Length: 459
Image (tube, rainbow, N blue to C red; front, side, top):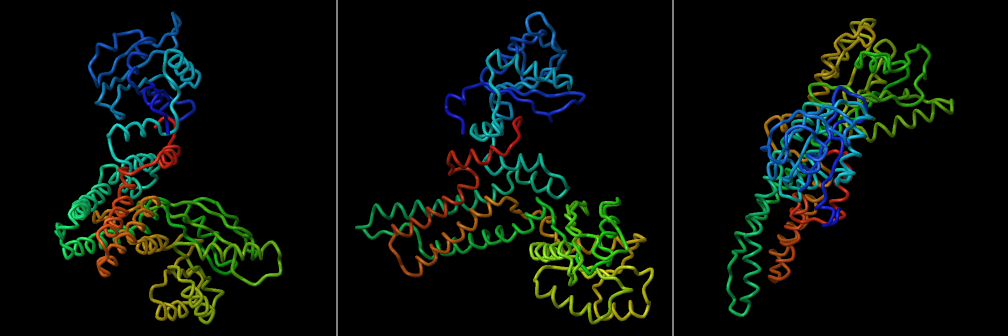
């Protein structure tokens, strides 16, 4: 975390991606941001202009013109960081960008650290820590659902839930603490029955938030989906058909895929990370056997398995055995029957009666792939997300909620055992501490450094 002295600095960084583009935006923030920019800007006197105005002019190093620019002014506290801020739109040449940044540094700015703009916004009270983290999630959102989850958190949806929980608990904590000052008078300011009702209510909410993390993790990071089956079942063909490109090698020779091939597909606003694996079979080929072993490992850690089998080369007994193994694995799976264009109609009917949830496709002919996509989307179960429920997507928040749950359970245990107020107050304070870690009421320099160091430099 930057020092108090560094907090007074004016910082500068490129806010748009590195590389050549039509325009680039250079951002300054700090007490002297407008003053420093004004020293190198030829046009209107920026220090006399209103906030949220844009001005055309040139950036000059002495008499040398570096570029024609547009300068956007944000006067404190009406800016992202709540400090004076300037955004300079230049042409996208990396040479121009470097020249302008070096000129601004020579005139009193310093290069920003990763995430320092957002960190200043948090420290200046623009938003809480959970909202600050959502800024990074929003930047990296690559699907409709991850974008919506990040936007909801940035707007304070998750923080609002946590703040309500914490506020209710703080009231009881203060009453318990007050009782400690009147131990000799045997006065009860906080009803133990009311405290139990509150803690049980808080536990229900915390449990819901904790249980939402599985869905939140899927929304944020995608669904790891393994395509598994015997060699030549059509796994690589299916991957290529889903991707609509020749990503995997397709061959009549069994065992062509020796390792796994992975790519992402957006289905219904959700990212699925499809993994084409080595065929499941006994083999004496050393390299292929390593691939088969890796397939088993991938299946254990997957969120979803597409069990693909060839209708022309698989009997009911083999399917029954494979289904039993997959059920014992405990990972959700979809039975996908491939090569319907070549299969025996009676076998398809028998299979459909035995396993009515089977999806029948022809990967080679790209037939019925929409039905498969709909089926995998059903298994993600986005109903909770689409009804507007708060979803936990951050592992740090999840960890703090798990610790909060344990502390609240300790409060209930204490009430059951009629422990003294000082110990009861300790358990309540611990619950408040973990809830406060989420939104930033409770922070350490190491925690802030760890969070903001993962941001890009211009954010």
